[in-house]
Amino acid sequence: MRATEYTGRTCPLLVRTGLVAAFLAAGVVAGEQSACADGVVRCWGYNYYGQCDTPADLGPCSSVAGGSLYTIALRSDGGVRCWGLNYYGQCNTPADLGPCSSVAGGTYHTIALRTDGTVRCWGLNSDGQCNTPADLGPCSSIAGGYLYTIALRVDGRVRCWGNNYYGQCNTPADLGPCSSVAGGESHTIALRSDGGVRCWGNNTWGQCNTLADLTACSSIAGGSSHTIALRSDGGVRCWGANASGQCNTPADLGPCSSVAGGSAHTIALQIDGGVRCWGANVWGQCDTPADFTARSSIAGGNAHTIALEAACPQCPSSLTGNCTVDSADLSILLGAWGSCPAGTTGCTGDINHDGQVNGADLGDLLNGWGSCPN
Image 1 (spheres, rainbow, N blue to C red):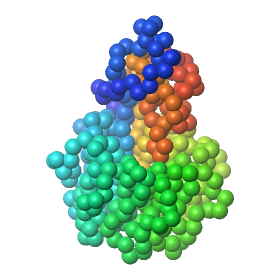
Image 2 (image 1 turned 135 degrees about the vertical axis):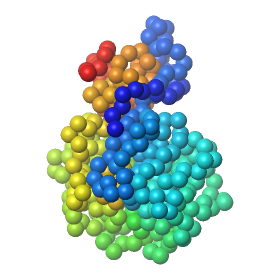
Image 3 (image 1 turned 180 degrees about the horizontal axis):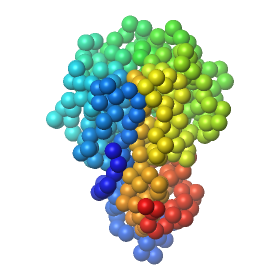
Image 4 (image 1 turned 90 degrees about the vertical axis):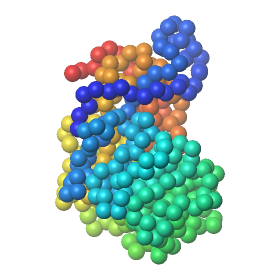
């Protein structure tokens, strides 16, 4: 799917710095609201169930996630769309779901974090994985495993429910506050607020044995039986099952801004927007399309890769997605000035994908001022 038209969404300015005020005084920033850029969903790899056939009417999206044999997209308006295998109703988004801020996939169930912090699940419910606890409280992050669900409460505590055969739902008492969560097939991964990584559950392949020399991390992900961590310096480390080379991080990878996992392959978003994959590649899940330019979100299914592409692939400075760099884009960038939220895969205005919206991004935007290349 390629974007031919883009309407965007509104986004209030978040920060009123002296720099913003100066631009306002000069009449450069147009208005209190402007369009926030979102992108086009691209998928490659195993496609027997149509999990790589992005719907033509999907519209612009802000993030993506993967179930085992299906794809999940969060639209710019907060709506959730799913496609691919639907034997258990995992692609049947509830009509009363309401706007969401995040999505995740288990093997055969879908998880959504509503904008009010509540968690909703649908699809296979054989082990109660869709029965959100009544006392869960508001959450900030979600993830899914084979037959269980993981949620991070806003107070930093991790809760899990569903299948617990390997103890994957037994959150360690000494875990401490966390900033994000992820799931493998039967093991749970948590990123502590201090950057440390903890894992529990199935450890048959050493997927829960966090590396002693790991150092502080900024993001985590899980494959079926391997664990992936993004260090604060942008380096990617993996451990656990490695039969397909999914833990062999390429020597020339370079710094990254986000990581994700498929069943037996690993996905990384480089700071320049490129997507690199390694591990199992029987279905071409590691063959990133030559014409692809990522924006900010990557995910993995069982044997397919999902990524969010910029609405204007050859023009990352076009934050509105209208293929022109002008005062509307400047308004967005200045409004998002500062660090991206912890545990995210990037943020609006972070043109160079380094986790910050700062002078470097401003320079890139001004350098690309005007109409984008055709």
